[in-house]
Length: 406
Image 1 (cartoon, rainbow, N blue to C red):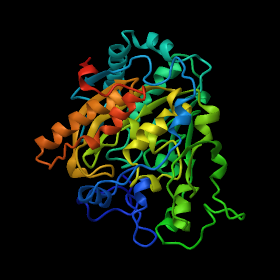
Image 2 (cartoon, rainbow, N blue to C red):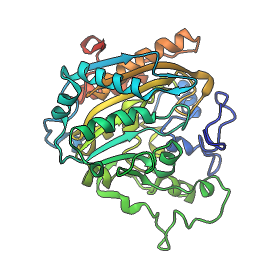
Image 3 (cartoon, one colour):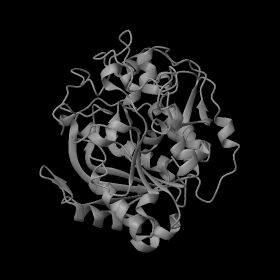
Image 4 (tube, rainbow, N blue to C red):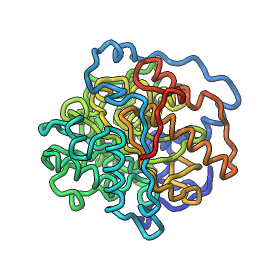
């Protein structure tokens, strides 16, 4: 891990600056950066009923005709896991073991050998985006070896290196987690936006890295103003918020990478909690595919993970989800908490991210109970998954989910 990076932290105290940026009148806007829910919101939710849900443009997304690959994908409600205790330990990750796990999982999901499974999802001219989760670099971020196995599969299927993009919302996080050009020659490594950490943390008054001479965020050009998730929620107008979120109106724009370049996507989240919920497949995209998100946490939170995925930029391109559970975290998430991690040494496969998250939600609840962590099993923590089922985006009823170990 980087010397400055993600050290062990005590739950709800001693927060690393990079984990939760305390900016602007004491507000924890860093929650948007980490795609997570600050403890404050959980406390408020326990005190009172949430206000009426703000209006969004979900109906516009649902009105767009679907395609062959639209969620829930080719295998609705099917989740496959592969476990191998030799995959990872305190010495590191065994890439050969992970590659074998990937092959086994894909065969379990598709019923076809790895090479043949490629043809179900891709053509050789596809431009494929691999969405990783670099939060908690070196501790709980997406493992490079899992991405290595996916890249090898795509390359063996005939997709050129130049047609593969490893991406996340924030550029600096990718580098922190080891996703570099040196590791992946010929493959694009792209963040949807830049952010000046020093300015956001109040350590610098120089805004030139993120603020153009025209007074606009330098990353504005990376977002598609014609493709957005609208929510009737005002965003803060201060500069630290704009630095982190690019825009501060009522629109969360999709990255042009998703709307104009990628033709298919593979989602590679990690196995971790966010309070009593999970920060896995749907959250990796719900809060990673669009900007201007911190404003959404309190009034909408988990519903964003359903509604953003309903838009064509995600819904029609997301063909595979592989949850990285080599090292998992049962408490303190979505930021890293070393003492709450363990070697689960499992990969989870699905085309249906909602079935996948419901399965993993129930598994993490079991783990939290095993570790004597107080668990609130209120349905509100998984209602967004059932909401997705009502919208026809996935399967959330455990009785209708096929969960098997390959």
